[in-house]
Amino acid sequence: MARTKLLLVVLCAFFVESTYGASPLDLNALLQERGDISTDDLRQLGDGFIAKQLNIGDPATGLMLVGVMKLDSDPGSVHAAMSRAHEFLGNSAEVGIKALNVIAEAARDDEFAAYELTKVEKEALESCELGDCRVKLTAELINYVRSLDYRAEEDAATFTSMYRQQLTEMVRNYQQSGNGALWTYRDKEEPLRVQDGFEAALEEFSNAVELFPNLIAHLVDYPNTQLESDVEEFLFWSVLDFGQRPTLTVNHVASIRPANPEFGHVVMIKNIYANHYFGGRVTLGVVLTDGALAAPGAHLLLVDQLLYDGRLNRILRAVVKRGIVNDMENRLRFIRQLIATQPDL
Image 1 (cartoon, one colour):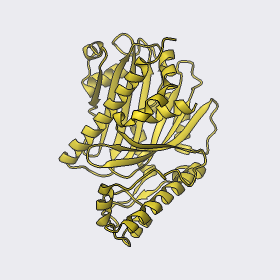
Image 2 (cartoon, rainbow, N blue to C red; image 1 turned 45 degrees about the vertical axis):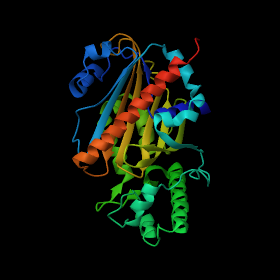
Image 3 (cartoon, one colour; image 1 turned 180 degrees about the vertical axis):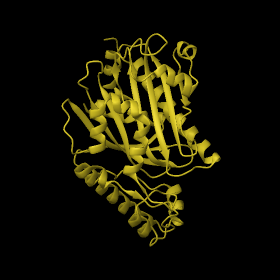
Image 4 (cartoon, rainbow, N blue to C red; image 1 turned 90 degrees about the vertical axis):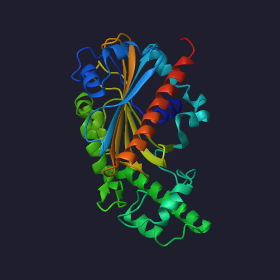
């Protein structure tokens, strides 16, 4: 189980093993109309993959990406490969991960001990004030920032310690009382509640709400829900570089085997903190069996919905988009590598 967690963390996606047949979600139309991905594109995938932006919403306020990869292995091999993820985590830099930690069911005092304030963060904090800060923080942390001198190593270390402590408290409170414990960002003139960002991102997955209502309800009402099937869930934090600033994110992963026999294992990831860029983020991944798409064979479909923490200018948008596309491509490569090295069953 621990090894499965590690792979799910690295992939940052959710997996559905399905025999869709007639699905209320027309994936072929979605890919063709919104992603300009044709049936011919799918048939010519071979050992490669596609990672593209979907033409949905205002590009200045958010981004939805889709990744598609053909799977030559049967679902059993894919799931067996999960258990070997630990062999590759030592090379996590290959998938853009600079730091990573799976958080205990009851968060410990040292959960964020491995997080270090970067030079970029220190420079950003020097000019940080309420309503105008390049790091996403609460009002309490921003006011604390104003009392420190980041040219002094001692003050930088003091803030890092405070930041780790506040993040740990946030996670503990979330584990006990759910969305109400999540922060309100005060880095912009307009305050932004993390809970509102999650709910806004979730609205873009209306079909997922229809297909997996119990799992969606669990993420919305956590921890005050009862699920009738086996559930595995955990929190983790990671640092990834999207091209301009290393970004610390904290995420909640929940997986369930739906009662509907058409579906297998479903995993969902909800972002509950990001120190840069994101006001809300939900990631979707589906392992589709032969027949689900117009092209023959099983496929892996990843969908990543991000809402920015405000309107981004064209230049910054291009930088962030490039980093997020690279992030998706890295995960598809990782999955391909993991499956390719899976011994025959």
